[in-house]
Image 1 (cartoon, helix red, strand yellow):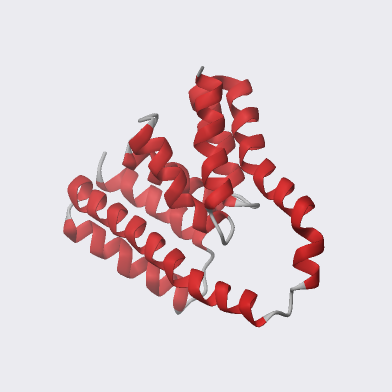
Image 2 (cartoon, one colour):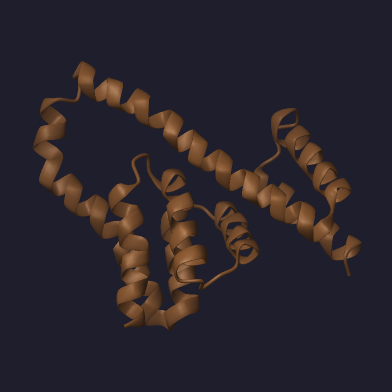
Length: 176
């Protein structure tokens, strides 16, 4: 039964998420944290942060990790397949239609309409992470880490992986 739940937890976001991995992350969070309660919001946030450091698509990394945590190696494989199969099947089935209408005005409008919905979902997820951070480490550390991270990314063009590593070291010293 657990493998079926793992499959559904990653297959459903894969089917309804338009826009790739970043669009599916809030949907995966809902399934994993709220519906099945396999991870807490904090654990999910940590898994997401580590997944963003590694190369490759975020949804597949999250699926493999969470599936492995819940169901071992078989769970990781099931979650990974559930994440990849929807896109694979849809691309095979719809390839000729996509190719025929790739320059269509309607397809372009659909993309323009969907992008704000994805932005709102990602904003809600970021807000919940900030809310958790306020509760866990307090507003001073949250704002300090947020402002320093923003400066490092935008002004100094430092890779987010290095910023995450520095934040982990900071947290290790500040909260141990």
